[in-house]
Image (cartoon, rainbow, N blue to C red; front, side, top):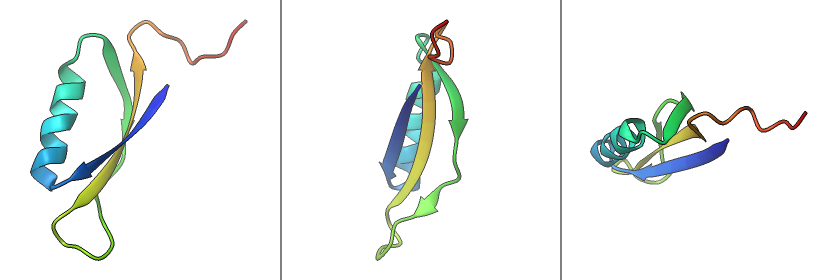
Length: 61
């Protein structure tokens, strides 16, 4: 699993999340709430956990 931090305006975060969600090679495992960055009311952050389609939890047997 890959953990991604998206940072930007709320519109930029929404656009990038849509790009990730529409990618046929990826599965979005979870997304966090959108949090404001400290010291600004323009920029925010959101955390997204993704996995390659067909990939298990990464634990070998």
